[in-house]
Length: 339
Image (tube, rainbow, N blue to C red; front, side, top):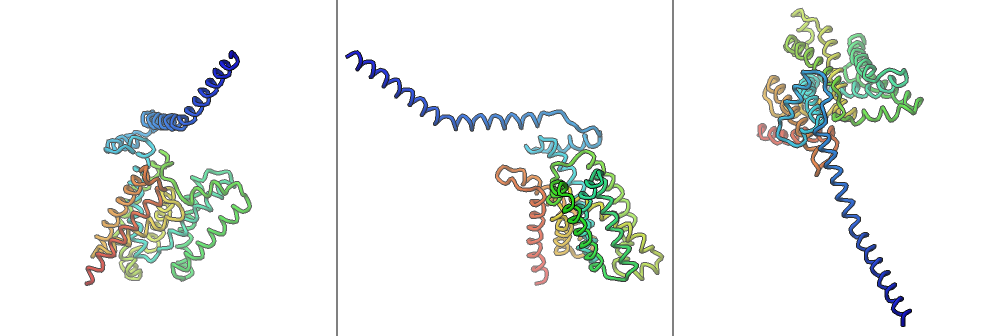
């Protein structure tokens, strides 16, 4: 009799233990999810409240100004830095795009963009920061294209094609010889504007000042050179000087655009807004300003859309997709104009 009671008690204890284990197994995933959500929320709160690492007062002021935008994504400093970088580089890329389209140099940006790949590989091999080798090689490629074009008499597309092949082959040769450079070089294929640094912002600002001054004093001369180089020479315009200077600035704009959208999409960032503007504008001046508006809108829209929880896509790819959508819409308006 006593043994039966003991067995019943032991059986009840085993059943309660099994039931408790089952309950804990059921509750465990919910508990883990709750802890994970709490951790993510705490991390986001720490990032939002983290002290600013920006030292330059101008950059700090502009980032604080962007932080007043009523959007949750602007609570993070890296998002404000990314937006500031896009607001600087997008107008320059759009202006260069209109001039590249009209100069029939659409593949120029491809050659310069792929020089970034070779520039990174060269810097890693020579133990020099890619921040120096990338723009240096881009300038060499850009000026080299102009020099060969002037001295050989070949068309722009032919010279660009040769330089493009040389740059890509050189980059691949270096990477194949030094496999350790592959991972660092590949990051520039896709770009990431979210990793932009304060130094990059300052360099972009300096480039924007020089670019604006050049366009202000040379805009009409560049149009004249584009329409008729011989006529420009007759008006005592130094065609070669302006073309070399334009190529140098274009090379630097392309290299900084690689930071935003990567080597694979840098041409689209320049060409697509200009192509859309050409469908909508009735004059060169209007085309320029419409291209700038489309470039800025695509950059800002791409940044904000890519940061949404329901999207979570690459920022550079989203920027280009936004401009492609606008281009598709512009085709509709162009057909209406023709009819």
